[in-house]
Image 1: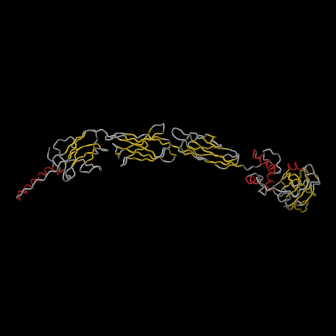
Image 2: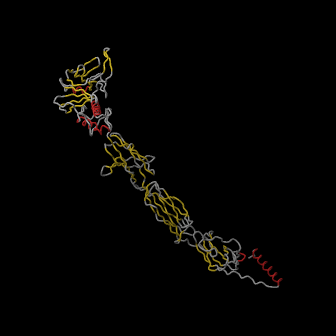
Image 3: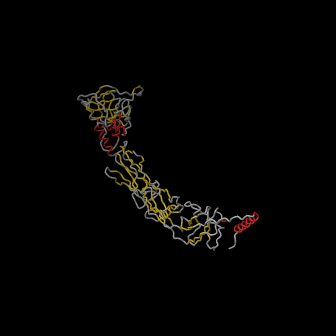
Length: 523
């Protein structure tokens, strides 16, 4: 083998030193060669080949890949320079270029100073044939066995090789929807302690495993399968949450993540169990709507998306719908109208026929109740009236003898009919407006006279006067009468007569017999 430049320089240096010694007349002793390394061996490390030996010399050794060369080996040339943290640099080298596919030969020289110029003449040799890959083990764990969307699950894995952590390795987190095909969820690199961690928000129930494909040095491995069940997040809300009877309320909500085309079960609490009342199909945006018309009371609902292979059962929070009595107006009908008519009739208000229909007579009966109870005179039956009718203040008759008496309360604008102080009828009236009007050029005031009078004349029909039409009038003082009219507003509006509705006039005409006492007063 041809001498290297370094070897030639060293020889020239020796000659020069010898010449100098001759000149000085004295010989210098030759330097002792470093003791050679011993115990050179090779084995597979995590991702390459690890060479180890015993080095008695003070300096770092020289390590070369001499594959294909023949003795004598020259320490000069490309050295194996990689080191590991697991051993001192003077006793090991790590060759990341080792492929574990062909035989390689390594030579190690001991030195005093770590340079090839001072390397000992005889290296330690080792030939490495391809070695079997070392067994690995992968593990995987999950932070929870079940997660409610959109909460995340944390997947923690580890990879070991011959029982020790295997850092810097590429591993795959493989996932599959239960019952479906597998796919790579993420590719991760193990940390210094051989672990990986991945946070993930699943949209279906899934199975997970950690897969290491192996390499030239480490065998492949796969963790046990871990499953995380997904519970969908189901919402439900009524709009509005309080509705009057017979008005529909809409229950709407959504399911996340999306489950378009799936049916949910809308359930109502019966007092002992949940009963399914509707099964709407989720829209393309995974939403649903259901209209409900319910009896008067508080109702409780929930929405359920039942379990399937890709999910567990998702249940919404329970929501409440309060159905209140509706505000009744003229034209309404139903059992609530019937209950209203019966209650007012029991309190002696004239509502006409008790027939479940809120008609003209019922409206005037409601108005009379509002007048007596000093409520707003709307002719409608709402929450205020429903509350007051539970404990009404009522009205008392001033006359309590045996004679039938018709008392007209100007302040409240009602007529009360009864005897012995016991009320038989309360009807809505409209009395004199107290406004000025002219008749035949004479100035008059629309005033209803106060006092105690008696019915002295009756006309069973219609009387046309200069001031208007009087239906079935019962006269109690001069030209003043209690008579039917097509206009009975909630306030004093007549020329002085006591107006009642025509249907009420029909029902009172026979009762207001000649001689019946009529008392007209302000409170």
